[in-house]
Length: 113
Image 1: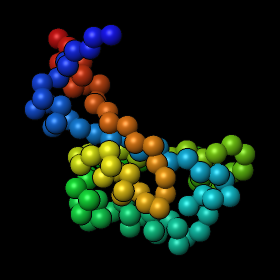
Image 2 (image 1 turned 120 degrees about the vertical axis):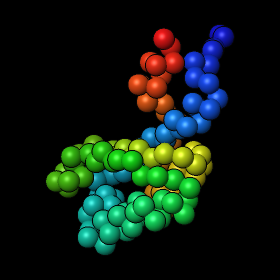
Image 3 (image 1 turned 135 degrees about the vertical axis):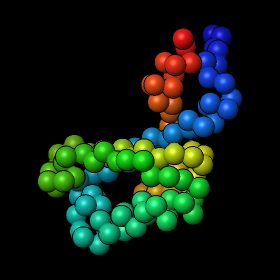
């Protein structure tokens, strides 16, 4: 299958975003204790992210984490800018994350016209 690069190299580099998904069992939820919430907040602080060459953009927390629901795994998604997939994975240690590089729809759509 042949693919084509719809974005120029500079536009692609300027638009590099990473989506990190963190999945955990309800009983292992970092939201279980105030200590873990503080640790996550410190880990995602602008200062901490900057040291890793990253910028925290936003996070989407599974409602099950907020209410400490049991049942299926909790899944949280974090949007970060810059660095590399490895830098993003390293920023979340010791929590395992699945990292994907993404491009915003607006940039993608603009490049196709």
